[in-house]
Image (cartoon, rainbow, N blue to C red; front, top):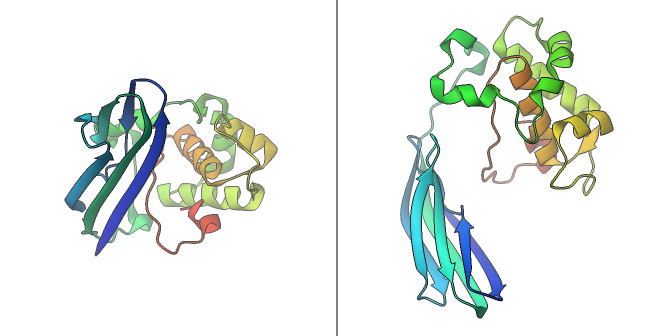
Amino acid sequence: MKFKISAELSYKVKTDTTFFFNIQAAQTRSQLITDEQIITTPAKVKIESFELGTRKARFLRVQVPQTDYFKISYTAMAELKLKPVNLKRAELQVSTIPPEAVSYLFPSRYCQVDKLYKFADVEFNALKTTYAKVQAISNWIHRHVHYVSGSTNASTSSIETITQREGVCRDFAHLGIALCRAISIPARYFACYAYQLNPRLSCLL
């Protein structure tokens, strides 16, 4: 499957500024990116590209002089080559977690895993399979947390979501990540293009 990706950002730059942009699509074994193009206005700015982390997230560092109008546009073609996975058969043991996934067990700013160990253990850890545990976490969030637009902000964490029982997509995701990590299932946050997907349902995927 092929599709076109595009993004455009514009700013008024009041003084010489260094921007960091993470707007380029990921290059992975299942996603090939071609025909990439980055255009800036004004055209003559210094751009440096680099990668970070085990997932090789792609960043741009752009040096922009003071200007009334700066714009950066990104376009690319993505080709997906996906293989179906039977999640019900996917089992995970802590002893076999790949080293690059171990960090996805740790507490983080929005996912205070250390404060949810007991709750997650009582609610989900008795289930026999990894799939059943993750499905139960998803079902619990769906039943107990209400989707309320504008109910949270950029500082809302999983602890606030589980106590207030309301949130938006990112809050559903953070809570699901925290509960999975609390029972030794590596989980991480990701963003994607979800064509024609109901946003209320995408929170639970």
